[in-house]
Each structure stands twice: as C-alpha cells, then as structure tokens.
Image (cartoon, rainbow, N blue to C red; front, side, top):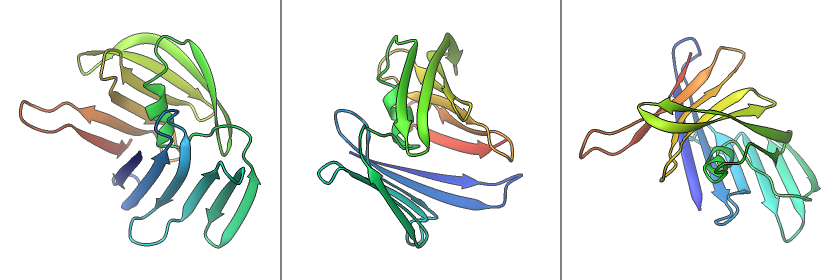
Length: 170
C-alpha cells in the first residue's frame, strides 16, 4: 500500500509545499519506505526499512547512514493510519527513526459532530482524533511546531462530493 500526502503551508510560514510518500506493510501498517520533499525533484529525506538485509537506510541530502533493523517502524504518514487500528487500547508504543513513541488514549470526544477517539503522542506532543466508528477516519491532527501548531482536519463532504483533508499552520 502506498499513501501520498501533499501539504501546502501559507500564512505565518513561508509559502511551502511538502510531499510525503509512504510505502506500508499491508497487514502491519508499518513503514517499508518513506520519502519527503518538495515534490519537484529528489526527496530531501528518505528512509528505507529493508527486512531482507535487516537494515534501515536514512538519506538526507548527500548524507547516508545505516543501522540494524531490529523492530518495526512507523513514519509520519504510517503512524496516524496505524492509530486507526488501536481500538480500545489505553496505551501503546511504537518506533520511529527518531526514537520510541508513546501513544496515550485520552477521553473520547466529538469532532465535526462525530464520536472520536483522541490520542496524545509523546515525544512531539501531537494530538490525533480518529472516528470511533467504522471506517475510523482520521478526523483531526494537531502537531506543535516552532512556528505554532499545524492542524489537519477532515472536511466531510456534502452529498455527492468526495472527502478532502486540509492542513494549515496556526
């Protein structure tokens, strides 16, 4: 499975476009490959999780580093998708290339009129809201940054229109 996220930033941030592409393990929803860039050329950051070789390869610019692959990893795109599968768990941990991530379930809430599960991720301090009932859509994400929070929200369609997601800098 391949998931592509395109984000346009404007407002307090300089005009910026980011493209993130994640190739996921179809059953585990963990990362097999992740790339991030401006979408116009080569990725500025890339992570490959090679199960056969047992290696993680990280590339940023001209620099490259490898380390042993000893567990499953998530990337910034696969992690929120994996949260959809947690169900009633109160806590979970997973790994990203920067370290271990603790997922803490918060009290259920409502987002856009829909019952939602709320999660808090540490480190990073992100909040992720997942539709409680099937199809468990990602309803809202809030990620703190040095420039203020970046928020992504699902805008539910009117009848006959497709769903769309919007990201904005706060």
